Amino acid sequence: MNHVNQPVSRSAVVVGAQWGDEGKGKITDFLTSKYNVVVRFQGGHNAGHTVWVDGRKSVTHLIPSGVLRDGVMSVIGHGVVVDPRQFKKEVENLRSLGLKIDASNLMVSLQAPVITAYHQALDHARETKSSQRIGTTGRGIGPAYEDKTSRRGIRVSDLFDRDVLTKRLERSASEKNALLKHYGVAQIDLAEEVQQLYDFGQFLKPFAGDAYSYLHQAESGGKKILFEGAQGLLLDLDYGTYPFVTSSFTHGLYASIGAGGALPQYRFGVVKSYITRVGEGPMPTEIGGPLEEHLRQLGGEFGATTGRARRCGWLDLPLLRYSIRFSGLTGLILTKSDVLAQLDEVYICQEYEFEGHAVQEAFPGMDLQNARPKLLKLGALKSKEQIEDYIGLIEKSVGIPVVIHSFGVDRNALDVRRPDFFSG
Ligand code: IMP
Image 1 (cartoon, rainbow, N blue to C red):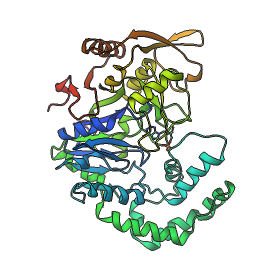
Image 2: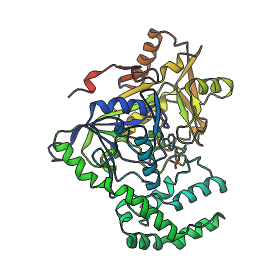
Image 3: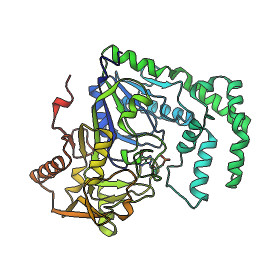
Image 4: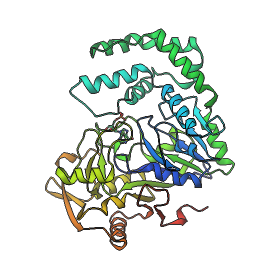
């Protein structure tokens, strides 16, 4: 692909525009019918995409949801941290649902960093033994990215040679064990770890390939690519609510960095009709009390990955405006309005009062702890017209269209409001 003449592709990226859990699973499942290739470009098995296939619930954490569709190629790019144990588990689980998963429809980048038992142990130790909790998913995501950045990590390509694997793991074993000792947890047995990683690597080997070149060739051959984000924009390492963020770049434009391919032309942000958060960190519109619990139950707001109760709040427009701006979103996909429709009154946050001023749009490093949300009372959103007004208000407030509206878990409870965003 010639980047000078053709800097933007026909591809699309879909990311969560809040703190994750916006209902992306159903949306990417729908969108995969319109694309040939589905690609993960960041994060790891901290994600949890719930989709329903023939009345059966299925959750994928690491593997792109493209595998659920015949004829779609799924790719795990080098920006993703791969746990080979989890990879095997998910492939076997999906196969047990009757799905065909092999190298013809799933590829893992040879360059992807590997999550080891040590990373999981350290993530878990920090969350349970330290006073500075982030509320991570405990999957070893952060420590694996730390090793990547400090150039001590191992990559998928290292898994296939026992000697290389031993050498790479030996390099940093003493340092890692010193850290585990600091937290008073059991050290990792090197020989056992090498054996396990090698064995899981053998399972993964047929799927491993040069994902970057595959994507460029697919694009040149006219294939349409969908990049599937994990977590949410407000968990981005650079732009999110640091330090309560994940360790990867959830920014939509990272797609081209974390996997390959030209900049996606369409950039969709999935927005829940209200807002939720798991883990620690400020959340200006958090509701609190019995109403929050009521909304949590109505929306089934419990983590797909960890089962944790999600904190619930009203739709926060200052945060949404910020997400749209920093990641250059071109369209929104609104989900779960059917949940709001069950409440007798609904609120929306138009702006904050912050340090004596009205603030309409959040900004990097803003102390959200001290942002006082100004809530607008909307009453009930029970009828179609009332929901339509709500969507109109959002569009007017943030300046980009709601291109899809999803109003239930069913595959059919979905309205494509702007087909022009999906043609061509
Ligand atoms: P980590 O990604 O496991 O390191 O967790 C860091 C933060 O991101 C924590 O607040 C997690 O709850 C949050 N997080 C990670 N993955 C997801 C997700 O898929 N949905 C929502 N929050 C997530």
